[in-house]
Length: 438
Image (cartoon, rainbow, N blue to C red):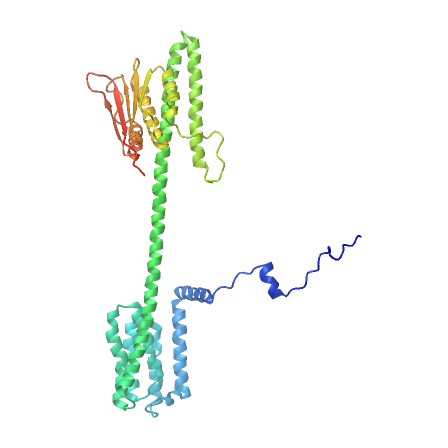
């Protein structure tokens, strides 16, 4: 094996410590902040509390009952008492009376405070001064959290009253100091309750807003789906209705010519086949739009734009092949957007379809398109059929309403009805105003 010269030989990488190499070789995600752990733990505790409220109340109450009984049995109460000779039975009753009602502090806080008040007064009058009397602040917190704030006036009086009684009966320390300290404790409990209550209200408001937005989103989706279904139904009506009318006319003409001119009958069959294939192709393109949910999917090779003014000649050739003479007159330079061109095309298509259905033999159709400025256009379609033939509302309910919906999208007007006497036939008049400047 040929050895590389020293200058060309790759140097052996020096060992690196894991602390220095780890961030460069494989970056590690930063640890979650402490607040995330606290919020997650708090959410779990609250969820458990909602599922098992009694268990949490028993645990909370049991903790303070146990603490009060330890203070009673261990003699800790003697360190702050004003009367060391308080009877043991009274001490036990006071310890239980000031702690056991906490079991109902969340469901009936006012009742709990009223139940604890006699024991607090007895505690102050006897001079026992058990620290369990401070648990009334827990009840004050729950009153602030759950009830109207007007309850705080009498609740504060019931809490500070025993303190004033202690100062008046036993006279140790200054009144202002004892009552002020008790009042400060009540204010702190109220402020904590207000903070938690405000947070709860804010969270509920956010959740309610999220629910409303979700409902609104679903409603908008349903409205959009209904509008899309209407658009698809209108397109399918225009495609199928017109092409079937042309096919029907060609079939009737071919049947009539079959006995006298087989060549004309063969031409009619060829036209029927071409019209059928055209209708099938348009339907396939429409269904492809419905089927392609992925916006990045490649477009089908046979997908073409929606028809416009350039496709009118092909449309008129198909109508003329059925035996209905059609004359087209165009004035002005077309400056229509694709959407307006589609509207004009569909209105002309629907008007000719009605003429094929109702005008009768020997009728003629005339189309006059006048282009204005900035996308304005006026289209008049007339036929010389029976004046009462095309109904104002076709039986399927989609012909004229569909034309009016298309016209309304661009702020236009559509008029359809019999031509004035003595003229015969039907007239459809479309006007689209100028496009608004951007």
